[in-house]
Amino acid sequence: MSTVEPDAPITSPAGQRDGRKPSPVWLRAEPSRARRKPPLTLERIVDAAVALLDQHGVEGLTMRSLAQQLDVTATALYWHVETKDDVLDLAVDRIFGDVPIPEVSDDWAGDIRALTRGWRSAMLDHPWAPGLVGRPMLGPNVLARTEFLQAALVRGGHSGRQLAVVTRVLANYVIGASLTEATWRRTADPQARAAAREHVTAHANAYPTLTASGHLDDARWDDDLLFEEGLDGILRAVARTGTPEEPQRP
View 1 (cartoon, helix red, strand yellow):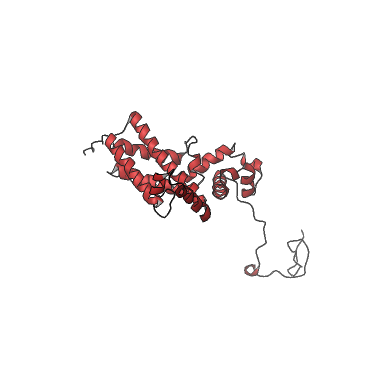
View 2: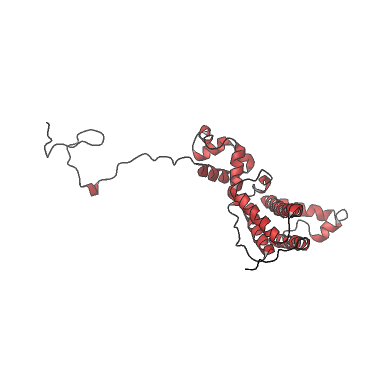
């Protein structure tokens, strides 16, 4: 049986004797270790996809660019998603998760107003999203908010085909307003925006109504104001076509 003398030279991590005695454990630096990449998960993929979409739009998102963003091979992505369409569907549903679901109140129209405000805000934060809302919308976040919208409309007295029509009117209003605003806002060049307005006013004879209304004039009508007043008009019309449910007695 071999023994080690108390003062025997120590062996360094590299396996070489350096003739030094070990220092107290509290004074030793921890050995450096190579940092491991975090595991690839569906959540990380969606996070990276949303970041790419915010920066480059739908055209800038490819499976290759997504893999580069995550510092993995494209093959690794296919363990979690099958196609780019899968990624887009997941990204859209992630955005809908940012839309707050209001507390249900006695004011069904107010509940819808609160939901649609949050919906528009989320769409404007991610300008690529409105153009993808026409895709099959089966994600849990989308379905939860659609359920809230229709449940509020049912409380307002809508059902059957009328419920489907009103749901579509409200959805198309939010999506259309968001898409129009996002597209206009991306025209960041003030000269280009001014040129568009001047084109209309320069042809006042052909477009007298547009000229008088200040069409494309950002300073005249605030987008938030126009959205709110348009929504109010829709909800007033919706209220006239429905028969509100009687509140249930305890």
